[in-house]
Length: 469
Ligand SMILES: Cc1cc2nc3c(=O)[nH]c(=O)nc-3n(C[C@H](O)[C@H](O)[C@H](O)COP(=O)(O)OP(=O)(O)OC[C@H]3O[C@@H](n4cnc5c(N)ncnc54)[C@H](O)[C@@H]3O)c2cc1C
Image 1 (cartoon, rainbow, N blue to C red):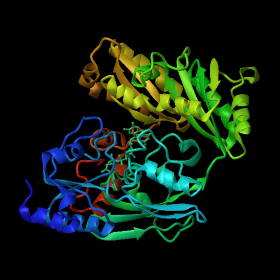
Image 2 (cartoon, rainbow, N blue to C red):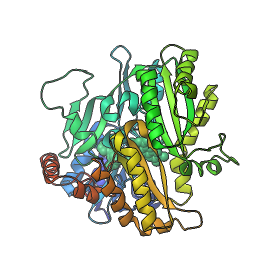
Image 3 (cartoon, rainbow, N blue to C red):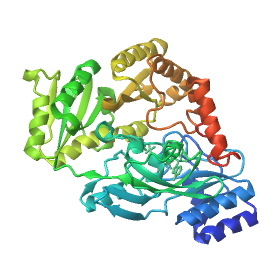
Image 4 (cartoon, protein in one colour):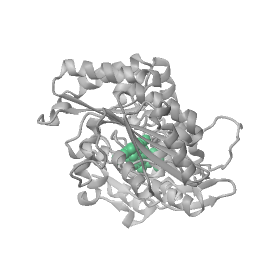
């Protein structure tokens, strides 16, 4: 229960309509997207400006209350969900959603943290430019959340992840000061690159309130294809072939196992998938072309020509934008289809490409030997060496069975990742879900450096406690 004086300070900072305390109003903010974590918050506070956000941070500091930053609450590791003990508020950035500036000449856009990713994409497009970060949660997730988790998505192959797209940040520090680092510079070697400390810090070092982001030329045309392959080795050979053929115009290369595609049809209200999936693996490829549609199609078709050596079983190239969107929908619906099917134990891992096929084969065999009910559901951004290696149950086995063995499943997967020099969190961060596992797999030196940063920037541990570290 919040003290009346603390609540009064919050209300003074943001106004009464922006401080929520009724359980019915706060419920959606204290549970995560996957319904795996629920926490306690004395209030949900929704500032509309950076000075208001700073005033909230100061009020929390004065009253010894922790701050859990939250954007769209689409994170998959419980990072935006408060814990069960101690005093905390959720600071939601949803009302800090202004596009502050679009500068087509400098190819930059400056936006507030609570802008949805989609709103930023649209603002860029309205100015005739491209903001390339793209992921299935883009209608709900926010730029602040994207930066705090260093989000990846489907265009990393060509444009990099959120970190690579950021030129400047504005941050409210744990002591309530505002750091204005909103520089739209592509070159700045005037000391430590402070923005990098906050990107990927999952709200544990400060509250990102705005960002200056890179824009790019809008491609003139896009060509999309779905190719089926017999093995991951074949998919990797196809990736090399497409890179040689398309160079930097290859903007997506997504891998999906047959099992991960199956539950998508019912989710989309279809009797069956629009393409018959005959092979064990399917790749969704996209070429973004700066010439025209026919050039894009020609590049894609040449790369996918089996007679010219493409290692594929079958392929369809979308003939229209609508068809292309249909193919993308198949890929983007996979996480939701898995959630509808009861969920599974998720692993968001990355590996050097040469280790991917061996990892999938050997880990699958290991899991199968240990649990006869196990069903790996593998998909992800193969072009980046990033797989969502989710472990669910075969048909007829309750989904809960996988969660009952979560620890052992994690251990089998993570050991196999670590043995191949990979990362146990490629995209989603650590949150409260993976912080202990990360502590196990990181070196003592790395952990010490991370703790030093935390101590320097948030000595009282008020920013998102119980997450990441
Ligand atoms: C269907 C689906 C598909 C997804 N696909 C991808 C994908 O392809 N690639 C990918 O990387 N992720 C993906 N995600 C995960 C998620 O969408 C991303 O992590 C996203 O970047 C989170 O943004 P958010 O605004 O929802 O952040 P939240 O969930 O609100 O917060 C995430 C973390 O960031 C912190 N945070 C939020 N805002 C701020 C801020 N302003 N300042 C400081 N810290 C802050 C929170 O405290 C928390 O630790 C997916 C999620 C879903 C549900």
